[in-house]
Length: 221
Image (cartoon, rainbow, N blue to C red; front, side, top):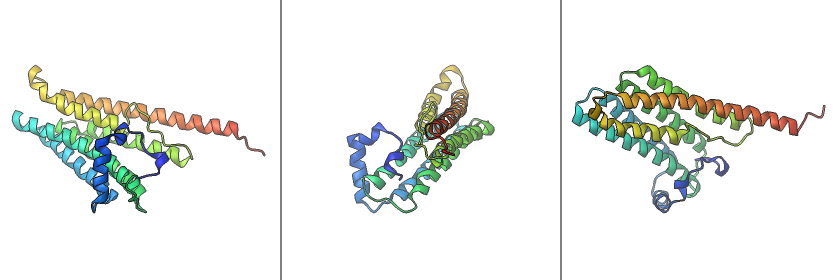
């Protein structure tokens, strides 16, 4: 639920299935803000599944990891459809800008913290969550400086969700090599380090673009 020029570029937005679902949601008594709120619920369920999977036996653990992966993807679908219903469906709200950003930050924390507790490394989970939030802060800082929104990676939101989803599914195979929580541990490290790299990249672009603008428009004084 944001301005057209500040939307994250997504190829899935132009697919037939996405447009069809968005039309149905737009015609229903569902608001974009409610879809954004639902993304937090999906993230909370993903985090709980990750957390409980750490102490579960093989069978229940597999079910919890699959559920966590599905809820992570449901979070992304909510992120896709809230904007489509708001803009394409013509249901923008005055407080839409808030609900476009705030739930995403909560969702990142719920998912990564839950995964961290599940593997017995809560500090790593919170680090991944904190650095994920920092990437968004840097993007919004650039916008506040009058620059276009920078959605670049290497660990933007869609990359973080792809990484943690893949890790949840790959963790199902850990019994084959007597592994235990190795895949999710590695995934959280990749997300944390990748988020730092993303933040540095976006921050560097902000400084470079601001300096370029200053050189093109020198102070006449």
